[in-house]
Each structure stands twice: as structure tokens, then as C-alpha cells.
Image (cartoon, rainbow, N blue to C red; front, side):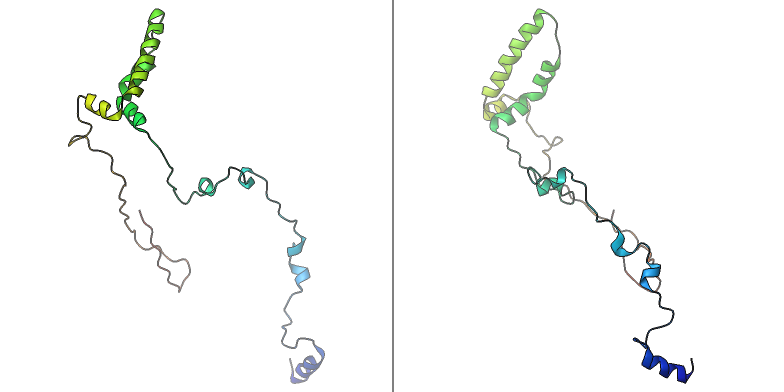
Length: 163
């Protein structure tokens, strides 16, 4: 543009710094931002406030769950495996009626025994050098891998993955 037309533009145009190549937003923005329908989320069980606790929905954290075991529960657990195998066997006829009555008596006697009595009645010790109790936590050792390449040239963001 010549100097004459620049001075004319300076006095006649609303925004003299505007470039001629700027497009009208109404002509090139298809669909225009306000023309889209409002998003209405689907109603699911997660929207219900009743019985929808955060710890049940939060998958990022593993919240501890409370578990209560009484001494009779532990005693039944210690006596459990042989009695459970006998209860699962299905005898036929009159043997079934007598075995059901015997198993009911055994379950009552197992629950009536206290934990110290059950521990004393065991023939072998609960834990030995080869059969140790479970450890409360598992230690995890992370191993850092090599640095991932950056997608943006000229910029450096060190990113490492762990296994």
C-alpha cells in the first residue's frame, strides 16, 4: 500500500491495525460454537446419592475394608477344611440323614469350642519354619525404564515409566 492509502485507512477504518486477511467469524466457524445442542448427561446409578459412597466409585485408591473376626470364627477357620470336605460329600439314603445329624453336631461342637481349646487340640503347630504366617504388606520395587522420547522438537520434558 502506498503512503496515501495508509493515511486514508488510518482515518476511515475502525481498527487500522487490522489485517485485510482476517476472516469474518460468522463465515468460517461451522458449526458456530453456540449452535450446538446442550449436552444432557445420561442418568445412571452413579447419580443416585443414596448408597453411593465415594470409596466405592474411586478406582484410583484401594481403601481398606473393615473385617471383623471373632474367636469362634477363627476357631472354625482352623478346624474348617476337613469338616468342609466332609460336608460337601453327598451320601445317599439313610446315610444322608445320619451324616446330616452328625455334621450338625460337629458344627455345634466346633462353634462351642473356644479358640485356646482349638489351638491345643491341633496335632501340629500352626506355623513352622517352612510354613510361615502371611506378611502384612508386599514390598514393591519399581524399576525405572529409559527416558521416553519427546514429541515436541526443541523442548525437554523428562518422562520415565516404571515397571
